[in-house]
Amino acid sequence: MKKRSGVKVLVVLILIAAATVLSVSPLVNNINLGLDLQGGAQVVLQAIPDEGESLTSEDMSQLVSVLDQRVNELGVSEPIIQVEGTDRIIVELAGVDNPEAAIELIGKTAKLEFRDPNGEIILTGENLKDAYPVIDQQAMNAMQQNQVILEFDSEGADLFFEATAAFTGQLISIHLDDEVIQSATVKGPISGGSASISGGFATFQEASNLAALLRGGALPVDLEIMSKSTVGPTLGADSLSKSLNAAAIGFIVLFLFMLVYYRLPGGWACCSLLVYALLLMWSLYLINATLTLTSIAGFILSVGVAVDSNIIIYERIREELYHGKSLKASVEAGFKRALWTILDSNITTLIAALVLYFFGSGTIKGFALTLAIGLIASMFTAITFTRYMLRWTTDVNFLSSKKLYGM
Image (cartoon, rainbow, N blue to C red; front, side, top):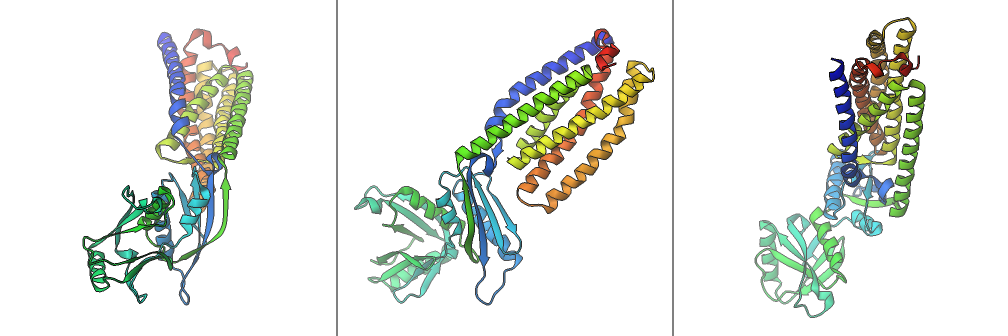
């Protein structure tokens, strides 16, 4: 029995070391970083209803949906788009290369209209099925090369054909947000349900941005940019570096304290914290969570809770040893006496974290999510991992001395 317990302890230590080493690369390279850690842009938008009308929850939901689609078309990963109050929307774009260009596109209404020579609307963006950029190598000049191809649905194709047939030899203009972006003379009826926009794009990226804007759809109401801020990638990297350094220093000091004061149990507490950290970080990675400075704060706070659980257990074990019980009996009694204290303190904190998550917003949600997952992971490691490691340790002769438990 004692030999088998020693083998179990050794196997667990090897598995922890292997898991730690193998987890560094995938977690560091693939976990999502928030705006404050990798740079990007934040913009606060004010929804402005048409005169005489009021905003509804459906308007705000549609705004969020259109903005989300528009941001995704720009290739921004993991945007944070949330409603604040009844008429404002906060958009956070982490990792964007050109924050100002992204903000400009987000704030546009993108109301597309085709108008006849009399200014009457022929068809609108509601009939648009797709929009994509192309490069026409046979164009007369460089400005004509970059184009956006528009494809209409069946209704739009019919309307466009009828209009080009009716106004052959006359001008049809394309308007975006009431501004003319192109006017062309109709040479004849155009069938097939497609049209092109050219002549106004200095670069292919400008054509791509307009295509993305049109694919995202028009906003149901106008938006006004109330405030905007950008975080450079250098500043974000500096924040991440300082956060990681602070966490590393905290872990080292914590490990030293546990080892010096609690000795062998303190060593198992350090291993327990490594297991806890792996469980927490992999959980955040698997649910595709975004790591921010407040998330790191939640992580560090839950580390304190995890250590506190181990300290409660070890102090209970010491009390049992002071009363003359054997090491094995003290371990069992110590866990039994500490269990309800640990559950009570963790569950009350977990309730607070859930309240923050469901009623908070933005970075508060990130803090609450990290804290909640950390609490669950810390309870698991304290109640199961630490317990079994101490049980197996008491069966190993050279590890069962009471001196190793601070007596």
